[in-house]
Image (cartoon, rainbow, N blue to C red):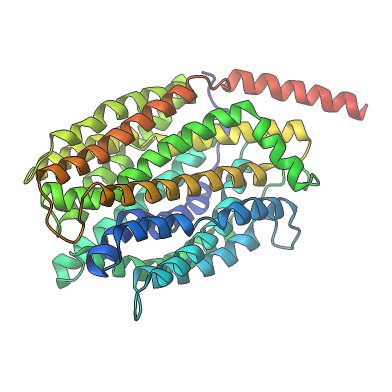
Length: 451
């Protein structure tokens, strides 16, 4: 694998300033699957099946908003750039929604959950689609893109750690934060401050890089081209399968920890090892991808991850330390996933933009984002109602049969989805050599056209 040109490397201060919003974005969205199903059912009395359906319905509007915002952000002209205005407005919407969703006010009903969930994801869309499109444009270097996504993912994992560590620390100091609802309240308050602060840092310190002309293609033309892109479809489907498995596991983890293992007050502390190992091992996966390639790294990580997941079936009541160990293994083996996937996506977007002769990043990011949110919503909309249908009661007592159903539902679908993800990436054709050949071909084409 060719080494990166040192002159192409982005300064760490710039990577820090660009990556830091991911901290607040993850901190404000992870509780949707990790905390909301448990807190809104066990503490606030909503039906588990209703919660799953509501969280799925909350993302239906994304079918319209994601493609539209991707299309508009490619075409936006302002003194601040194409991406920045959308991110600023999205931060205001997301921080308000996160605070009210995580700190429920007054009479909490299904309608309350639906409205604030919909608004939170609208804000998420307005931030993430321009933000990820911007990230894909930040560098043309094959390996440097993995550094960009790797740094961003480090901040994401730091956000995950905060979701767990701060409530646990607050509980030790003040006695408030040990219960899931208390932890959710603390995270809502942090989100109110972190979202506008971190996004303001990026908007102020990082200039936009306009590698291609402003998009002039129609919405229909853009998205038809996206769906005809075979390389994009492979990495997109793989990401969606892996993400659906992760969303499925996140939705059921709190129930698994409380009912199967018998842990309630220490769940946040238990998860810390998982996210801490993600933070520690991500740089190792990034370096491995620079040595052997992104596709090869993805396949190795996916195979290890798939072998680790079934270890959850060995865990029973009181096996807290075994749970900690398995979560740590899952964290170490799965930390590659988002950073490598996003870097592969950036390579595909570059080729597509060269082919179109203009910037099409927004369209690709919109399809990616829409799929990510819809797949996550479908996971919630299936697993929670199905679990209740099979006899599990989140607010009452459950026998050995119901607990076994919960364990199997937690493990088997995740493992199958991860196997599917690896199978699709196996066919992914782009590496550094092919990318360089295609760049040269497009350069010759442009020279002939201009000559």
